[in-house]
Image 1: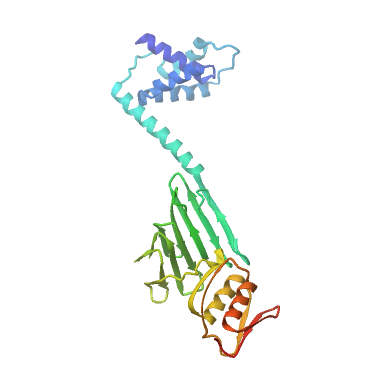
Image 2: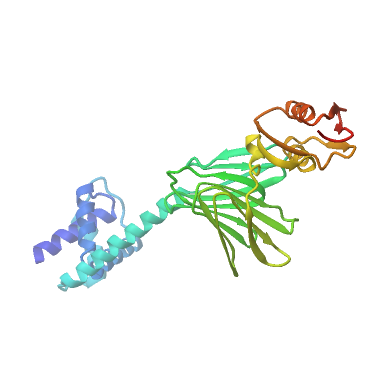
Length: 325
């Protein structure tokens, strides 16, 4: 035991003056992990050495350096001390768990990312690290908290967005719009939540989502369904989805016996052009599909289909006629 103590004291002496090798430092670390008493012994020795202000030497003299430190720890006569295996195992486990926690916290912090982007006059699409696409409509903005290690992603939305999550998603996504939450259980869904509007809409194109509030259970929506939250009534309701809800991103439209007034309102919103009607034509109905066409092309087709005149006046587009056929 005495030989072991002398060896440990020699290691401590080398360690506190910076002369210990990597192997010796590792051996000393293992010894400290055996018991809290061992760790305290090393800490006390370092503190006393710092106060002793021993002069530096080109070569380490363990006897000279250690004599002053030992005298202050034990007095002139060294007293034997012992290592307790039970305490050693517990202290070792605490040390391992402690280091693991610190390392894990560092990794967690390094994996946490924040993204912010805004769409003012044009639609903006951004890809997240897991390839999730967030497409913002005009006058909208988001802040995204993303942590791949924790498998969490939160989209703080003000405005309108289409969210497309890959089938092999790496994180669980949630959209927050004020007190409202949309938990992704699927892959493609649309959220419209402008702060000045009394209505918040969520439309699911693929998969499923849960639409709820902190104090209200809410509803679950499947593909082809639209959920509506009324802020004034504090209620949720469910309707059939609008097939053109993502048109601001895709420029694709599917109109089935739709009134011309609603068709033109959708086109005006997506393309950012003012469209006015003259004559009794707002109630004319239209069945047609468009896939990423220019606005002028779409309006020409509508005009020819319904027998209407289309004139681009620069500041606005005028559609006129006496009726529809």
